[in-house]
Length: 332
Image 1 (tube, rainbow, N blue to C red):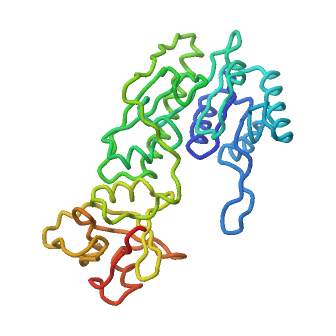
Image 2: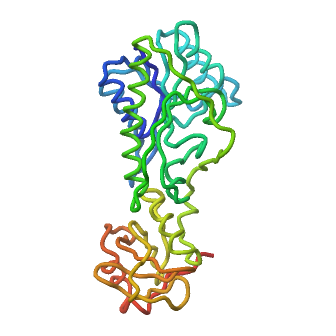
Image 3: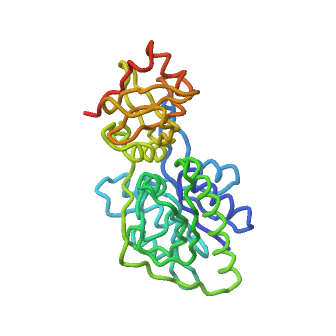
């Protein structure tokens, strides 16, 4: 099978690698333009571009695929991409966390006679968590399970028919980093299964999405990172795990911004519950206990600005002299 692949982050690169390793030919990779990142703010290629270049796969990086853009430069890029896609031979298009909307005219190219259309790997059980951040929102909402859908794409936002679905249980201590890795592995396997079936001439069963239970996973914003200590310990714990690794849940203590990486709802009855939301109640082992609006949060791992992730007790002791006098500031 000859594949056009569109994707940007590591989640997408894993799928691209699996397709390549399965013996399918990736004839073109579409990915986001290089972005500045890191302390030096140097331009960095996406994981998809890096893999493509390592394997001599042609790469296109348009800022948009809409040929009606008001920006002449972007319009020219979109026109060039349209012409390139129109001129090459391929059997199907695979889209994974690309970051750009595919206009209907691009989808139409993949649906020309003899082609199989465009397929998307989406990390949720559609129609739950359509949109940009399905992994984080599933954890934040306390979902007990999630999964991967291979979807036949249409012009809507994650509205196409599914052709293959698999579920995953979300572990009690799951964070977005660990769930991302498990879903990326599952998605890579499923897309290869779909492509192999197409190569063998099998007909895929398309299942329209349910009209009930639709939810949207809005993009994660840095402004969401600040902890609201008036929430329950369970809600705060879910957010800490959902925002690990990005943007990292945080709160100020003694004028120092602390990031929270690992936590749980306290079950130790000896800690007690008193004081105001955000008060540090005490320590036990390497853990720190913090009063919430309802219940107590046990924090295992914290990080100071410019420092490394360390156990919560050591981190807290480095910014104050006596844990019980410390208090994390309320969100404004």
